[in-house]
Image (cartoon, rainbow, N blue to C red; front, side, top):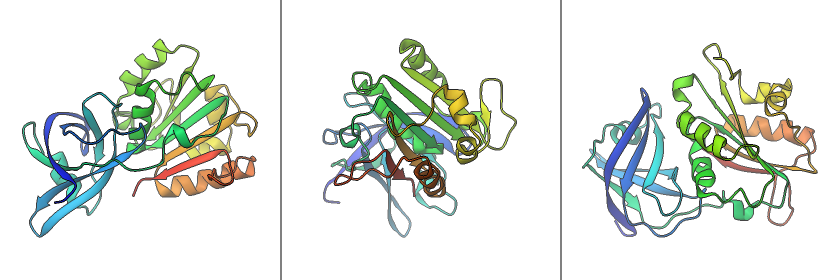
Amino acid sequence: MHGWLEGRLTDRREWAAGLATLRVEAAIEPFVPGQFTNLALELPGGIERRSYSMASPPGQPLEFLVTTVEEGRLTPALLALRPGDSVLVERKPQGFFTLGWVPEARELWLVATGTGLGPFLSILKSGAPWPRFERVILVHAARDPAHLAHRDELRELADRRAGQLQLVFAVTREAAPAGMLHGRVTTLLADGSLERAAGRSLDPEASHVMLCGNPAMIEEMTALLAARGLRRHRVRKPGHVTIEKYW
């Protein structure tokens, strides 16, 4: 396939059934944190491909956060790979879900559901937010604590960036353990729980929000934020909300 490389899986970390971080060795072109590339496998019936954000910063081994997609053909095969197995990787990264397109703001909110965490991992690990924003609030919601991938790693980063990086975790199906919220991020925003947990208010004068994950969440969050005066960001009409839909 033109524009593709044969990569190799070098490591995998399974967080829960159907959810893993895959480390892949492939010499793709330089990328900007927040961008994505395509992974593909040759399966019976043809080649299957899908876009995945890099979950690692530039200069580090490529990582991708992968979850099983219902009725999908590629994700079960990707998650069945073992170290040493090959996977096709598109050479050229793509996408504009990067800090370079985010306007100036005092506070950056990164709101993710499920594997929407991937690009935020790349952005945070790159160190790019720290010179630009006084405070970064990462919100990650998943069905249960096991699906809050990279949680310990993020807590270590927050400890190192004390006072600048704040974490808010939420679960939707199980009772929330101590220190976590229970409920969908849209509900938590609507009832004020999200801002109370962050100790910050979403303010058009100070905040920029990046949303990544379930398209239904993004649509509802965008409407809720618009009601608060935070409008969708566009190049020709700067705003307060940048989005990246997953699937």
